[in-house]
Image (tube, rainbow, N blue to C red):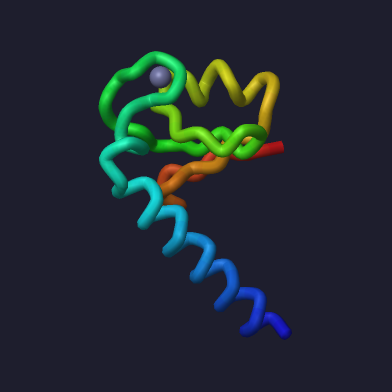
Length: 73
Ligand SMILES: [Zn+2]
């Protein structure tokens, strides 16, 4: 069961990275700065680090790169 969940998480992360690599998703949805590092999970937009800091107060944001993960609670 844990293996199945981990495989699903790996698939989800792969899809997120593929989507993050698309040119349209490399620009912050909110401020238009290049270099997105987080996803606004409420509306599914890619945002920069600065905007994710603002959004984290009101919505759930998830880091694209797990090495820079932030607490989404
Ligand atoms: Zn931004």
